[in-house]
Length: 216
Image 1 (tube, one colour):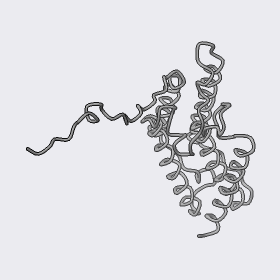
Image 2 (cartoon, one colour):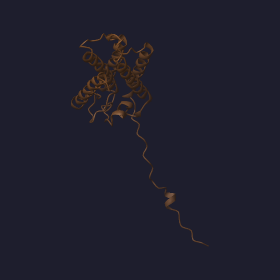
Image 3 (spheres, helix red, strand yellow):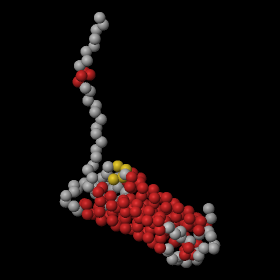
Image 4 (cartoon, helix red, strand yellow):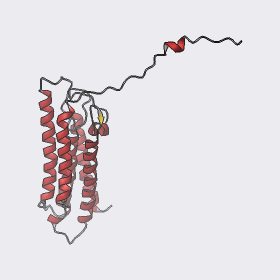
């Protein structure tokens, strides 16, 4: 691991530790709810994920390039805008549903299970649009980190060109995926909770009434 990699991962881990502390103390990554423990919010996790990556890249450039601050490219700003808009939309939906008198008070107050199940699930289990959004953001986040660490080692690149540029089509992909998540979230709190049927353990009376036969 060279100096650039070391600085990036140190900054990233420090930010992750801060986010972890704020979540434990102030529910930074959790849904608005009264249940305990609160479930993790995908939109807040997504915003924290991209904020940590972009901020780690900026700080790494500042430390390794004599405190120069790069001019962020448009794709990075759009990327943060998508994450911010998703968080705003998701929060507004939750607040609106909780203040809706036609919905039961327990609409969005189901308990959290664990990190991955919470961000992949609504109250009726894992669903495909959440899975799609999580996978896309994870893959593009890893790609962003790998390319940044490769580009910062290239002395031929100007400081403003070190942060990777995400193509328009890939931004549209991320935007559509987050938009579908936000649009379908408007229906999640209104769904009827599906309870799996209990196993039938009653023994049939016919079985109990069978009489042993005597040999002839």
